[in-house]
Length: 243
Image (cartoon, rainbow, N blue to C red; front, side, top):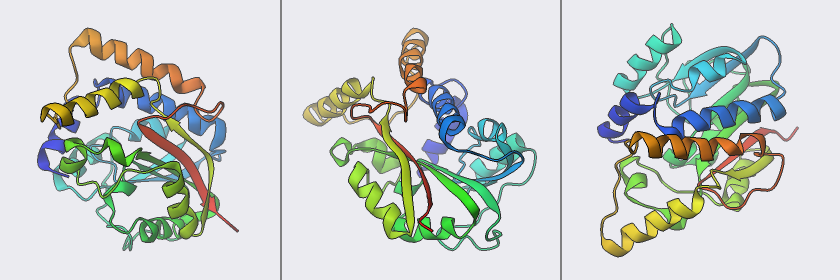
């Protein structure tokens, strides 16, 4: 990702509506469907500045990987121990068969060979282990945001299932989320194209609007995985080995 993306993440990941509500949604989703064992070993790959690590730590003992040096330093401070720098898909030096849960939250779209990356993750799982995957949805929503984040693609449900199954995994509870705000996001992307003002700035809006968006997004926390949601900005699933 461009340096500015990590800088904005570090500045806003504790206050921006998207980060705050998403953590709660993913926590509830994991609680309902993750079946994470007590004392689980958890690995977050591509942890950025470490803003998800406290949430994941409520489920077990967390390790993390981040390839950007500045973000890795911030994440290490948050985690209280060194964050690794192993790269996908090989993940050199990371113990095979060691983890009950691997989290890749808006990471897989950054990897050119997503199937190889998922295969690499699968090799780190204990028997019964799972991979929590979140990705951006809908290629037609491609914007300057995807460019500065160095995305290779956005996913449809079908393309994500295809990649997961090609890696020898099967998806569970695959669903859209960030659906309530999807019409607004889609309208903003379309307007940006029409006006030539496609903006990659992910800074939070004014405080009242930030609070409103957080409230609306967080309303989904009790629905994700339970009921079919309309198309959303993101897709989440749990992937596990086929056999």
